[in-house]
Length: 433
Image (tube, rainbow, N blue to C red; front, side):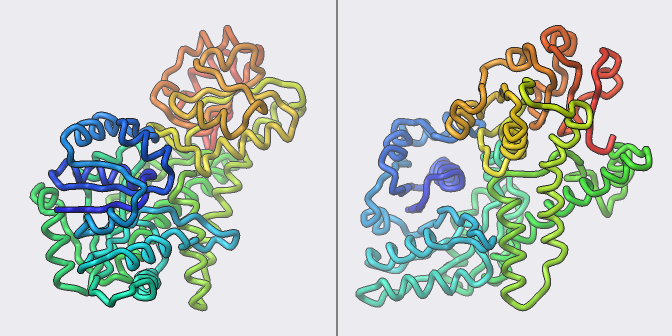
């Protein structure tokens, strides 16, 4: 099938490349000419496991190309996927300006029936906004359909999630669009992955609700971790005991320094805003967001209980991305922690396997970003671990001890063994342990 993808960010690049790998003809559009040039040269711009090889293979096969020419791209696609950003406004409401601009672009340049597929995370009712924008931009009235097809791609596992999804959600009120999307996803559905057809409002809400539920589980455990510390319980044991209940399960029951990324923080706030716009209360969602922000602030608060004066001290930070296997630092706990450390006039030396360049661009000379984990701890008064990369799960603690000046480790992800750390003479600070 001929497919056009608007937006070459995380979702757009992965979606376009993976659809091309299924044999479709893909054109991906972006307004950033430099980004388009890099993608056409086989540079994925973002870090995602397996993406570079997949991108280069499909470029070489001629099934995939990137362009800034929106008009030709609209003419190319039978299906037009909207994969642009919907960043939060100061109120928490999703900013739909990029989605609306794509809709207007499609309306201006379409010359035949099109199916506009919204993959961007948007509030309920956006399909009406898109329909209206397309109609208003048309110079000649032509038929089109709008479909909601939310993405469920986890950064670091996005290609696997695309190729082996737990579910494919499609919201449509058009039989013609339904048949086209069923045909498009047939190669994936053959692996017994369910395609769930529903109404457009339900499809739009499923994405927000899913992310908000997962964020709620994390914040619940983070709230409980404070009680564990107060009464001498261990949040790891509590989580395991809870997770053995089949009604609960073990996933997303990990206490720590909070969640981040492009989805959870934004979607929790946006869903709360949508509820309030409809005259409903959002106490639970507001609490989820509050608890998460409190957890990020708790890192330096915990550190100051052991090192009350941070002025002039060197603090090593392991982990800058919001999660492992990505270089994405959007809403990462590291941003808040480093800001808090700098506010205390501490010197920060940081390391991350993939996010170093992003950190250098964000912080400039305010912190030192190094290329080796053990270089980061050299002469440090304390080590703060914020991202659970595999290489941080079993580090050479003897080497860490020998290189550090101090003996404090704050484990923001509860990945180290308290017993092993304390046996080497460190003060270990976890979350709820």
